[in-house]
Length: 371
Image (cartoon, rainbow, N blue to C red):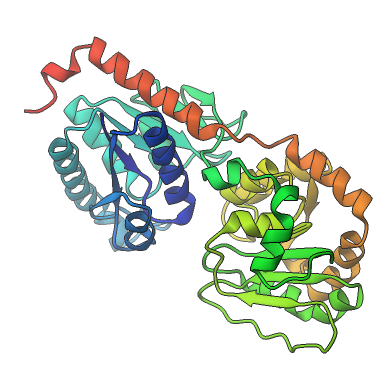
């Protein structure tokens, strides 16, 4: 079996694609997976490191405003579709599985041109342009959330890393805290703004270091590769550990009692899958999608939702410090968060891809695929 995944560009597209690929290999060990990507994002670093072949194609960003760049989109799209078709033809792909973004749109068009069945996975409540396009031409469309408005959508959840999906936070908490140089029995706050970090979260958490330490709270803070955070060491005070990036996010989840984070789909799905309550701070730019993702979790008691402008050092000290010292409330919030968690999105998406392959073979696509 030969499969091409199109999820390049951002970690939000790459990670679900690779989680799906991992699940496919568990199911069918000799499956060959190639990932489409671009040189612009994290593709060249993340995908080969996970053991998958990377094929680069030109990205097709769509400008938000009219201008010269918008006029260039048709030519760029044509070149990208041609490059994607070359990869699909070379790999003799049985199916394409796309996850949105700059790479997926051209890949869907190339697969349709070649008669290759393809699957669309939409991670967000509001589908992006590439996935809306792809969903018009395939009945195999998966969604992360049950109410996503997209043609042919089926609720399957989001593929997440196996290490997260199978995590027992309580069982590995001691190991996780020791791995990060944290004390074993202190309440612990995890701060993460994603791979690039988030200045607002960095400033709010580090600015509240004194209040958190005064409450006996220790902090594991992933500041992001684009930022630095400095917190003075305090003698005999709870640790405040700053790292640029967390390679083993599952250990961070196990170490934490509460997270301060953004509200992207990957983040919210992973937090709820492991039952970790969080204070979600949606990005203040864009179409308000992050608030839509985290809002239902917060409304059910599985977390807090705070506007970006309100996430200050004073708010962290006033709100999160006392919350972290209330084990009963944290436990209640964790149970509520876990009610939204789905850990089998990767396996469900493999089922859908296999369904698409079987239907394609029944339709006789194998006879006309490789002109």
